[in-house]
Length: 421
Image (cartoon, rainbow, N blue to C red; front, side, top):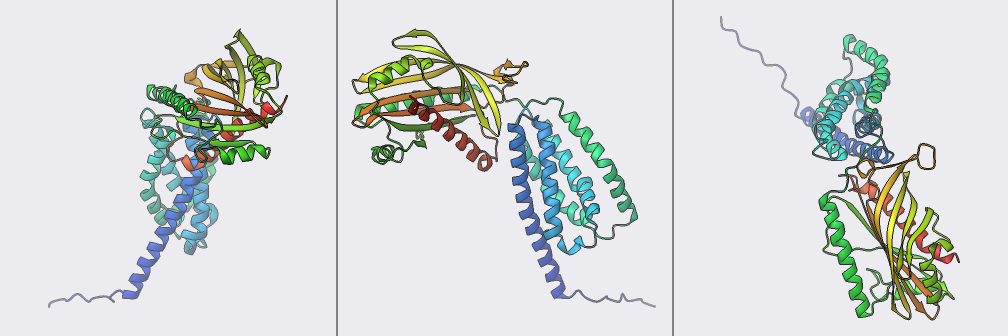
């Protein structure tokens, strides 16, 4: 007797299309949530690294923030159809045991493995890419799998009980090197700085020979709009650039600010330049001391404070030189010769740290002050460039607004100080 296989019911075409549609929708939502989670992770990492947290600990905490964010949105959106059949604590625990555990292992392992090759943030970006596919599979087959059985449920509950202790122990282990360190500026960064500073000097000398106003900007090359703003009593601050001059392995900030001192004279300005200790200083200058004084210039020590999510304090030394361009114009150039970051500034534990142990917020700085007599008074223009550690890869959208705000506020403070007489 010949036995014939009896075919089962053939799949309904509509159901297959529906399943494919559901899978596509779920995957697109997973990608969208993952994109938001990536932003959360990168933002958290930026804040933690800027606060001085060790790179590995910052990685751990940033990943944890992304896990919590992603789990919440996965339940509400991507796996909404299964959320009611899986208790919140169960899916939350599974997220840590499964996708979360994988992310922690791969993330921390990637940072450790690539610590001498890439920046901590760049290593995290690599880890995110490696985890994406695996995390989707785990979320679909494990985290939001309904009816996984008593064994999985028991493991989830046991894991939930152990998770706080495990997380705390791992956090304490990674927290041992509590100070985040930035490497000293590389030769490429220093060469970029010298190249940019030299190009800036040449550009401004060319402007002077062409009669370009000192307060002119990239957007207002004739200075007409800026002059009108100054006459209205405004303090004008803007970013500037030198085209065609690349900066390697560092962040270079280039800003300019101008203010009109009504009733001031060039003679009064020259006296103030020669004796800065006799006049008000910007609020971010905590201390000032002049040495090696001469009519042409002096050396000056400044204790500066900068705030970018956290406060950093520096002892800085500068070489200052003045020159009279003509009877109506005076120029003063300040170039940093030494910069040291302070730990525990203003406390009994205060100490200066070598460049290799600093957070890299300030490596070099140079300011060009130009004073021009007009019929309304003297226009004070400061053009400043600073060099700091590079913006972490992938964090430009997060870091750039913060850096820009700090640079703008610092320039505004510097030029406003001239209004105090």
